[in-house]
Amino acid sequence: MTEIKEKWTELADIKDELAARDWFMGTSGNLAIKVNNAPIEFLVTASGKDKKKRTAEDFLLVDAAGKPVEKTHLKPSAETLLHCAVYSKTTAGCSLHVHTVANNVISELYGDDGKIDFQGQELIKAFGMWEEDALLSIPIIPNYADIPRLALEFGQHLGTDKGAVLIRNHGITVWGKDGFEAKKLLEACEFLFQYQLTLNQMYSK
Ligand SMILES: CSCCC(=O)C(=O)COP(=O)(O)O
Ligand SMILES: [Zn+2]
Image (cartoon, rainbow, N blue to C red; front, side, top):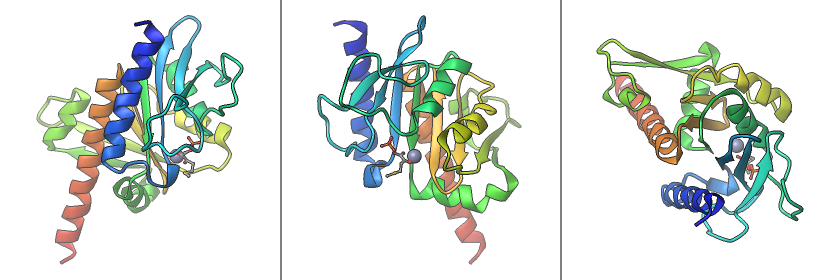
């Protein structure tokens, strides 16, 4: 199997798993996986598709600027520039973006703080934080409608080769070394968000 076919299958399998969790409501979400380093080329989901379906037109290959590498009738995700930022600023190999109720509510509750912190939580180990007092801080950025502006703001938080950023009342984007790591981070974040919402409900009783 060629590299691109392997990457296609890796991303399609992740898409199926996230779809099984119902994390692509209303065609939301987009996924990307790097195929080439020099020049940077990556597969990204085609815009506006029902991501619960698996088809031969789910992904297209784009360059570092997010432009299709070959002639195609498919449109890259409207949020491709955020994936471009990941691959130009980090060594990550995969980036995933989903909208869930939990990540949207957390982003609104903590949006004015510009971040949400997690400490003393076992699952922050997914981010490689093993110290007892380690603190995972997830930035929350405004949901600018202008995607180049959103990508610019998002890019300010790409200091590490794995991480997560919440976009207020929109969703989350995570990036990691490969599909396995990116999915692990996404699942850890969603666990932490659901935990926090449940805890908040308990305290408001
Ligand atoms: C229908 S959700 C609005 C767009 C969005 O936020 C998203 O994640 C999906 O856009 P795409 O162009 O990648 O399908
Ligand atoms: Zn989105």
